Length: 149
Image: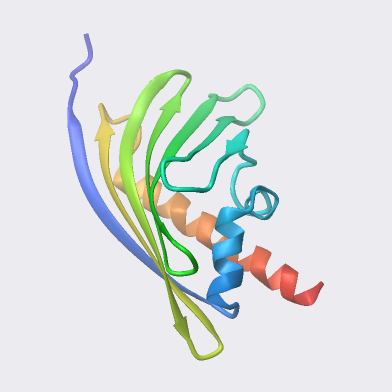
C-alpha cells in the first residue's frame, strides 16, 4: 500500500482587472460568463448553500470532478466556497476559497485565497497555485473580451 499523507497549504493571488466589481462578480455568478474562463459547469446554483459541479478532462486523460458549495456571498464584494477535487474518482484535495473584490480606480482588485488539504501527493500546492494563476489570467482575458465587444 502506498504511503498516505496530507499536505496543508495556503496561497494568495492578487490580480487587478480593468472592469468594475459588478462585471467581475458577474463572471463568477453567471454560468455562461464563467464557462468563458473556467470549466463549463454541469450545474451552477450561485447562492449560499448552492452547488457548482463539473466533471471532465482532456481526451484520454483523467476525468476531474470539481464539486463546490457556496458558503458566503456578498454581492460584488466576496465569494467563499468549499470544494473537493477528484481525479478518476480519487479525492485529490479539499479546499476553502475566498474571492474578495475590492473597487479601485479604473477597475477591481481581486484577492484569491485558497486553503487546502492535498492528499497523498496526487496534487501539490505549487501545481494548484500555478493552475489558479492561469485560471485568473483567463478571467482577465474574458473580461477584456467583453470590453471590446
